[in-house]
Amino acid sequence: MLSFTEENYLKALLHLTSENGDKDDAGTNEIAAHLNIKPATANDMLKKLKEKRLVDYERYGRSSLTISGRKLAIEVVRKHRLWETFLYEKLEFTWDEVHEVAEQLEHIQSAKLVDKLDKFLNYPAFDPHGDMIPNANGEMKVPLNKTLNEEVIGHTCTMVAVKDNSASFLQYVDKVGLSINKKIKILSRHPYDEMIEIEVNGRKASVSPKFAENIVVVCENCSKKSKFPLRDV
Amino acid sequence: MLSFTEENYLKALLHLTSENGDKDDAGTNEIAAHLNIKPATANDMLKKLKEKRLVDYERYGRSSLTISGRKLAIEVVRKHRLWETFLYEKLEFTWDEVHEVAEQLEHIQSAKLVDKLDKFLNYPAFDPHGDMIPNANGEMKVPLNKTLNEEVIGHTCTMVAVKDNSASFLQYVDKVGLSINKKIKILSRHPYDEMIEIEVNGRKASVSPKFAENIVVVCENCSKKSKFPLRDV
DNA sequence: TATAATTGTTAGATAAGCCTAACAAGAAAA
DNA sequence: TTTTCTTGTTAGGCTTATCTAACAATTATA
Image (cartoon, rainbow over the protein chains, first blue to last red):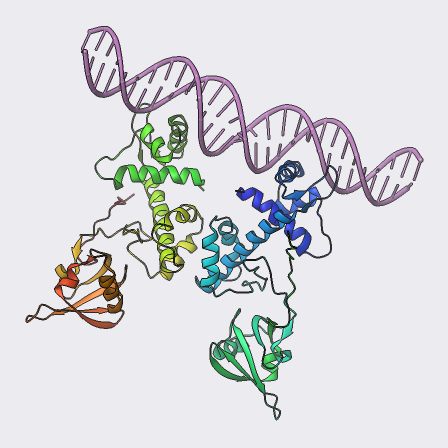
């Protein structure tokens, strides 16, 4: 069982490597800065996590997660984003309030809790910030930054974000029955005026290309790649 | 801000005093035993909590909570029982699984979270074990162990427990739309056969005295006393 | 390549929360 | 009332996670 602190180091390492792009390892100072602690402290912890076989660390070298470390880190990220989604969707928190509380909730130890929460939220793929939520196997759908207007007929996609934040547009979105994480099925497209027939929550609606242009979606059928790939152990 | 540990000491003291009846103070050994730690450790903490004005402690004397200590302890109990209710009612946990996870969740710091959770659960008065949940002011309704059959016409009561645990009875309970924490309004009683007309979730139903005899309720109108009274500060 | 700047490490200290072992105070019993 | 038992306290240690200050290795620069 890991301490809160240890979990936070793993999470930091995940974010500094796989997540924020190019690099696949991180320096001690960098890790310390990310966690708002001193390099000396991070150094001690890296040695401890190396002992536990969660981090690859060598004296004066850069550090990265082992496979087991990565798995645990992804589990923490999964919990964080599920809790953020819960706070936002069920408890009326605003998107900017969720992070702080989720930082605490992500450390609750109970496999059953996470799985039941996931089910309760209907297996969301994205949190209120639009970040991907790993599923129980650590896999994620990578968003393709497609708009609803570009979606293939017959496919089912998930709404990720809006491009237009005006009150009038958001009210329209609401009226159609759409919101973040809603599943949208593309039924057809009228050749005459390009109007798109969609289905949301079993309810049909017809939207214009202009409207569809401002809805960002990810298509479950089109993308399979994981942001934090969990190579086989 | 209190640590998890400090919160647990306050909770222990609350349970050893106001809750479990007669005594209104607790000995050092008793507190230590309740928390599964050594008396020496408890002794240190009692001195620390006295410094923080949360506990009344004197050398070689028995300890009790101050008004502020009691308030904080009740807040922890409130959170514990709200989380138990959430796990049971929303996440399909069984009543014997909720405690362990709630022991962790009760320490999450966020006033907004507690209040929103309370609202989300529709301000429940009892947790899955039938224990009273303090409201935002630390007040609780004391159950009177009344059965539905004894309830006054016109009053609204809350279902707390069942006396008969047979499958056939529980299915009947379910069919009528009843479950723990459901609010029941007593509409009338037919003089001919003593059948009781009730309203649950806006739905009317007619139940027999035999049925009503096996439903334990607490009447919001009949009891006002708090189990952990929060005297005025 | 020699020096300067950056980055990483070690040693020693502190605070929280726990322990054991020895001792002191108070209560009960002889 | 003296002895014994129970209860509570103190002193000194341990671990985790943090710090500062001094030092070492690596990398960049002149």
